[in-house]
Image (tube, rainbow, N blue to C red; front, side, top):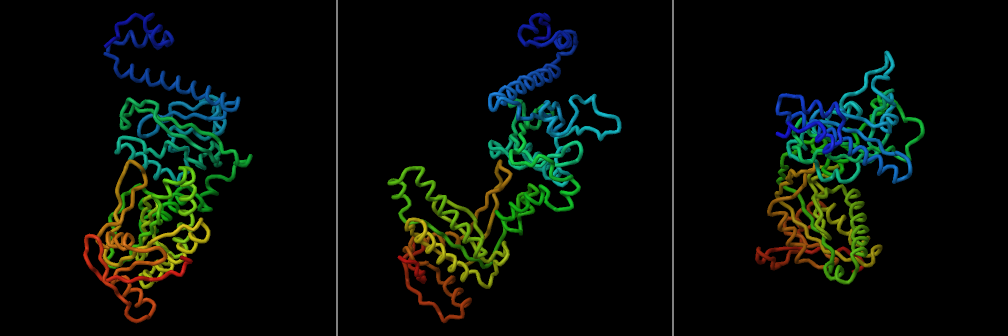
Length: 418
């Protein structure tokens, strides 16, 4: 196993000190475990040196703290001097004053207590998946960490693996967290952890608020805990497809940056109207939006007004996009009937939400066979709209629909300027 090398060879190849080399040579075991542990720590040391060099190049001062941890328990292996200052730790563990609170031994303990269980669940899911989520390519912003005096500091954190050749489930797998204090953080620490708890502004509530905004309050808390929600079946819901007219042609005429800016403005306008009309976004596909109503997923999403709110939403979207976003025109298709909202688990912590069923397919066909400035409705959706508004039976017309043949449909004019 290579343990019989001379001490000088080990020193030349690995640049380790005599005590480390002696420990490797004199052991009678194959020393695989010790070699792995030594290599991991040597790699950790080199990594820490590289981080400090990068930090100095960045702004001529060591502004990034580094935490290195090992295994599922995230046992702290080392914390560099910058991180110690940020957390209010002594320069060396041995310098801890008598009677002072003990230093945390796990990264979990550096987080507010209310967030620790969620943090452990997220890590357990990553280990089960065999990889950290790709979303960690980007920094985690505005994260709360506990100082030794129980005050809270807000930081930005980059997380990754040091030992990429070791399975993430291994006890020898080493993680790093590159931490920088937020530039907009006040000089004095905001409040104690106990005060943060009593105010209810902890990390867990923040995550829950985000997931509720994405998934609705029925399943938001479940997603926040790291669970994969069960499919939701609805006997009668309304699905609407929104699609930008001549999007492909516009992409050929505009630059990539112009298309990105255009779509960003379109999406922001639609998102605002989704909240206004209390409907639920399922997914986006480029220039296409898929939304549903009648699921009671957000406040105000009443089953008794599901089609009426969809038509009102379509009217507002058409008017805003045409008048305020360079004459953008859109088509709409609406269908009402049974449908299922399902959640697809991925390597990312947030599952992908999809709508399934013939009602969804039919709404897509309504949009594809529609015209700008009009809402194309199935007979069921049109009849439901008339019931909700107290109007008489809708005027239906036989329309040839792809894969369905000639079916009765209705048209609703939006009076949006085109």
